[in-house]
Length: 473
Image (cartoon, helix red, strand yellow):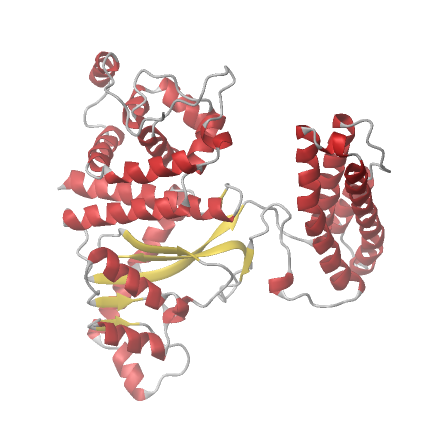
């Protein structure tokens, strides 16, 4: 049975003490990790949450064996601490396994001590088994610890939004058509190798499609729009033909149930079933836009056949381009601790977030903030009324557009301007999350994993902030 916590390091202690004498005791990295270690020990309840996810996860994720054939031997404590290290230093999984293996300090912090470090693919499966809800509850425990340590009193709340990109190339019709041809062709070739007796028509058109997609993307000149429409015609035909090959392969497999029952063949057929409707969607939107000249609405566009949950985010800022990912709403207090975060589906207005942020703040910190502020996108009359009704004493949400005399006087008042200066501090918090904790771009695949990734970034940020604040006291 999987252990929840690591056992005593025993023999590793002597080796670690030798390492400790060899480094500067005042090294900031060492002091920070020691403070983070003490903080994690003060919230042992988080291990129950992580352990529950690891036990509930599919056997293929938690019981996956290493290349040597041994089962994954890692506790909930080791996995959580390894995930924090990975996010804080923005390591890929290979680097995580390597650094845990080579550095005694990281071995000590992750509680692996003298144990064998799991293969990087095992670490990947175990870390991604932690659910978004668990990440949120672990963050809640850290916020409660910050309140207990008097780092955050909950008297102030500032809100802002940012965008975390999904791991996709810039979406355009030619690239999406090429991606769909490439993926279906690759799957069909593997299917032929796995089941040579399965008869279906197939021909490889990858080279022609790649050349056409490259010409469309890189073409220049006066008549480039005419040329692009001309190049799109054969590309669309090739994509439709490859989809026909995939449909024929699926039909052939249905008549050969003995072959379809083979595990490898079943997996490849499942991939065809998954990508076939997505490729049809890609063809439909390209045909409507290029051939029919229609304007496809944003909510009907498929931006990637791999990250289908990706949204188009237009924030309305002057000179800013459309972004592809998800909008993240963040709320921090005077300490900079993230007391509220939410991954938004679609591109809702920022003003829709404020009531939920107030409710969450009161739940976590046990009080309504006395001061509430955000930029002009959070302003609405309803939001100001809801904040006043909830008991917020001072609200600073600048109103866009032309102001009447009373509103202009309010926004020029000393309290309002002081709160707006306080609001500017969240820009630094968001900058740290984006630059130092990997929140600029999510490399994990899928909607659930995207939410877990954001939760892990906030967790690592909050833990390091608490360690720095408490270590400085």
